[in-house]
Amino acid sequence: MAIKELFEGAIYLHGGRPYLSRKLDLEKMEAQVEPMDRAVEEYTSALSNKSAEVVEELASRECLGHKISFGKVHIAEEVYGFLVKDIFGATRIAEHTFETPYLYEYDTYALWIDLDDMVYDIPEFGDGLHAFEHVSISMMPAITGADPKELGGLSHPSGRMYVYDSVPDGNGVTQVVFSKFEKIVQMSKDRLEKCDCEKGCPKCILDPSCGNDNRFLNKESGKLIAEKLLKG
Image 1 (cartoon, one colour):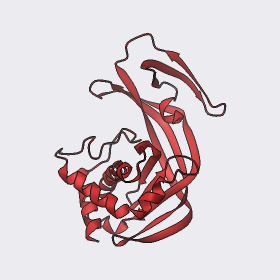
Image 2 (cartoon, one colour):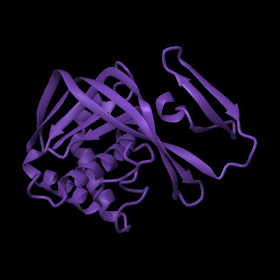
Image 3 (cartoon, one colour):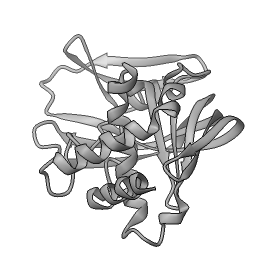
Image 4 (cartoon, one colour):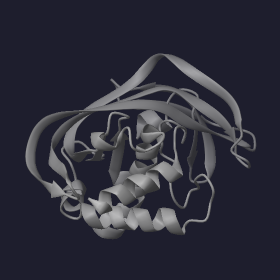
């Protein structure tokens, strides 16, 4: 969590008091922070990229006309900059890029599914899969009892979607989801249909932990992906 919350320049809240992060040393496992002597009217949000690489497939099964797999993966998370936003309206005030990104890598467990057969059938498929990834992860705590922060997600415009345990060596959450993914898809479709927002909101596809600052999302295409899966 440190690379996303205590990077140099981050505003960090502790006990209701704001601190400014002056330095994050990952080798020493130290963060240097100092109290801020003014009322804070802005907050910081990390900008990040991540990648997943399958290390070992441990199980697979047929799921809604597609193969879903479970196994060990290698996750690499890179925080390359951050946004400064107005605390009241979430308006962007500034954007900063680091000369040297913060990098954190670990092995964990994940499920993945390939939906490449939908790429040319659904408008803005990549943005739709990103939206589907967000809403499906937000449904998983109801099935698993886990906190959303115990899970991470990654989707590719080519059609592959990962959901992984967001701690080294796993926490068992995605193994539960692997066996109940059909229910997750149904719940995701229901949420997208019942949410009356136009293009996405925190109740459906917006995720405060999104490394892309909730860009590249398409609610309608995400709903079409869920519908097409259930027809399968």
